[in-house]
Amino acid sequence: MKEYRAGIYLRLSKEHEEKNNSIEAQREITTKYAIKRGYKIIKEYVDNGYSGILDKRPALNQMMLDISHRIINMVIVKDISRLTRNKNKTGWYTEIFFPDNDIRFISVTEFIDSGDRYEIDDSIMLRGIANQYYITDISKKIRANKNAMKEAGQFVEHYAPYGYKKKANDKHKIIIDEDVADNIRKIYNMYLEGKKSSQIAEYLNNNKIKNPSRYMKLKNATKKWSIEQINDILRNPFYCGNTIMNKYKTNYINKTCKKNKDRDTWIIKYNTHEAIIEKEKYDKVQQIKLQKQVKTKTKHQFLLQDLLYCGHCKKKLQYKVYKSSDKKRFLYKSSKFNCSMFYKKKCENNIHIKEQDLNEIIKKQVIKKMDSIEINKKVNDLIYYCMENNKNIKKIKEYNNEIEKLERKKRILYQKKCEEYITKEQFKIEYAKAKEEIEKFENLINQTKTNTHEENTIKEIITKFKNGNYLNNEILKKIINKIEIYSKNKIEITFNI
Image (cartoon, rainbow, N blue to C red; front, top):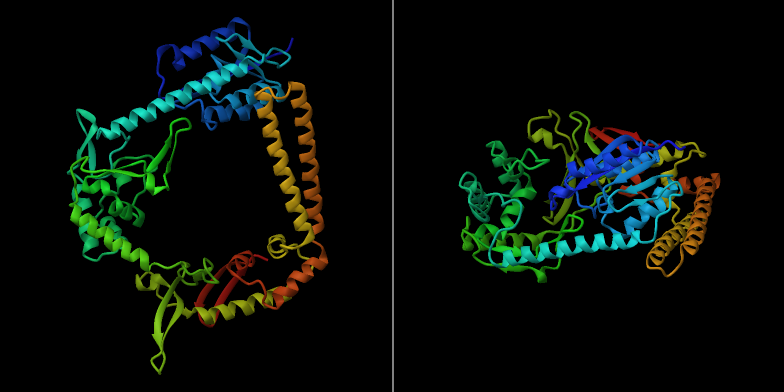
């Protein structure tokens, strides 16, 4: 008789805390079942506070890992909804993953047991559909309820914005948090006085004022005020008494929240709470920010970006663009690198060098290095970057495209089987064919990669580099690890090749 090593999986979401579905109740039902039948319980997996629609759950992930390592060969749950509420995932677990890994699956209260043959009746899919419909219906009701409460001017978010707090006797009403409201006023006043967001953040940090995440004791709270936090406060209309609805899209099924980029669908509810900042002051800040935004240009991507360091203090060099003039008083833009630590009195050496001069020095050094490199060296990253039109690279792209098509075919086949457009037997045959084809293309990719690094190809690439071709920031990062500047006449380059 086969010896079974059972794993018990227990799950409870935050929304459902009824007694008959508690972790304790699930544990009692599944444990009694295993003991009565003589199954040895190896491990218990508990996800408390996780929705059944989510794929990523700590205990579930660990159980999948233990299955792949052959630690358990039996999974026991109270009912299938504990494992998942996704109808497609229900089929994937019970018809593909568990059978492929020799896992006997048991759902106690639903009298489901895959047995030694690892097969389950088709009716399990109906349970999967019902479980998904249940959580979808719940999510719609939650969204409708929250929207109705927002329309009525009630606060429904988990946390009140920094500067506010929930009313003690009514969590759907918020009031000003006078302990930190002055910090909000200070931020607006400093900005209107001409201070930059970085200067405001520095002021708050120097005065040891806790930033929002630390003050609110949030998980993974940052230690210091950042420019982004200051800008978020300066842009937020909540501080002048208004609330934006539909700014974020919450998926109550998979517990995700994303910003709604379609501003036309945003709805502003005016005067929903007491303002910390007067409307006139808020509008003036927005006007200043809009003017600055118009003046902002695309960030310049210079050749040696992220490669330059001060040879003395080992800090990254600062890139600066400045206006200058010649003897004829013609204005022109120039650029240079310097050590910012010198001005902060943390570095004794005043490093500064013009961008154009440094670019020429580095190019010559790179060409010299490429000239001395052994011709048969395998510089893989270099080859892939430069040989975009190489026939072998094209083949690899074609093979990858075929693999993507076959992966898509596998998903479609599974969907067709779930919806009974094809039989189980047809699904297994076609699914196996697709897997076989994928393996074939993966082998072809490996063979092609081996043939790509031929000596002639390397010679061709290095010859082009000797002439100074292809030199840009991306490829320089593949060749150079870092550049340390001690002075204009002393530059040390650490190469990757």
